[in-house]
Image (cartoon, rainbow, N blue to C red):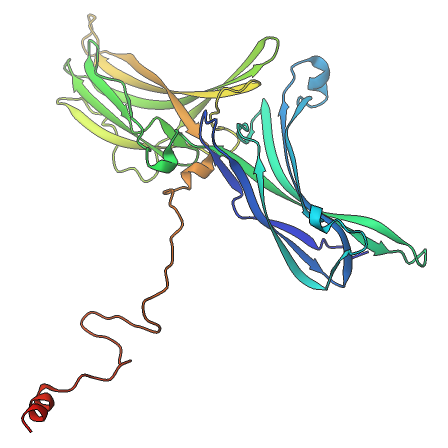
Amino acid sequence: MLSKSSCISVQLLEPTIYVEPNSDTTCNVVRGTININLPKTTTVKSISVRFDGKMETKSYSFDSMDAGGFAQKKPLARQRLVLYPTMEQADAHRPLVMNAGLTQFGFEMQIPSKLPETIDCPDVKVSYHVTAVMEYQSNSFLRVGRSSTVKEFAKQDVRVARLPYENILVGDNMSDPIDSRTHKSAWLHYQILVDKKAVALGSELPITFRMLPTHNGVSVDRVAIQMLERRDLFRESTHTSHSVHSILPSATNKTTVPTTALSEPWEGTVKYDIPEGKSLVHSTQEYSDFNVSHTLLVSIALSVPGTGRFTASRVQKMVTFQAHIDILDETIGELDSLKLPTYDSPPPFDDSEYVFGEYDRKFADPPAYSEIYATEHN
């Protein structure tokens, strides 16, 4: 037996796999390195890597709810790549003997397309992971001359995240904003512009308000932003759950909606924080088993003069606007830009240091003009 601590680990080059929505041609690949650090010389029988995915959905039957709720499990993927022995190496008389120390094995494995996104919410859980497996011979101290086969495992989570729109990798990454158009009421005309139709968890969402009062003494009591989350589970009949989340202004805001009477048109952009964590999850595509969608609800409470006998009284009115919005995985918000890797070409000269107006003194200085003139006239 080797030491109690595992001698094998797996390191992924890309722990998050970004998939385009509704793409039939995308080929997804997992790349990484298996690190094997042996304390002594060991005879290895096999080295492999496995990709697994599973989905757990909540069952609302009484029996399953008593058992914890997530009673229905479904495998999504199971791929295996053998690194040793390959077909050319399958010779039992030539085992792989690895010396003590660190040995690395790189791998690249194609995985199925159209995988559901990684998600963890009250109704559905989708998870993926890569497992590295090493099978080796271990001499038994109890039975002299005999050896047993032992397996060592190392697991690493893989996240599947959906990009907001297709063709983002080829530069077609423009997304239209949400525009309420101009709405007219008896008290004011208003327009609401949401900066983008897709926003990542943990990022900011700018919302622009345009207000034109059509009645004297109209003021804004408050503006409330809410996110309505809908979760559908598709069975013999669809089971739907809802939750509502308040979206608060960002602490870095420099603009606030005025609460005094609007005497002239007002326009301003307020940034709101999209929370991250299990309280609010990201949207998904509509899959055969589930769908998660979100609606942005904007409510503006107005205070208007009363029309009764007591002119000093005020009445509260409410105007609202709602629109579908795509909430993205928080890892999408960490992508400032999608860049191709740079190609580092070799420098034209070794050990060169370029400074404006100067060069390094690698070569001899050119002769002075006076020396050239004297040579030509001698």
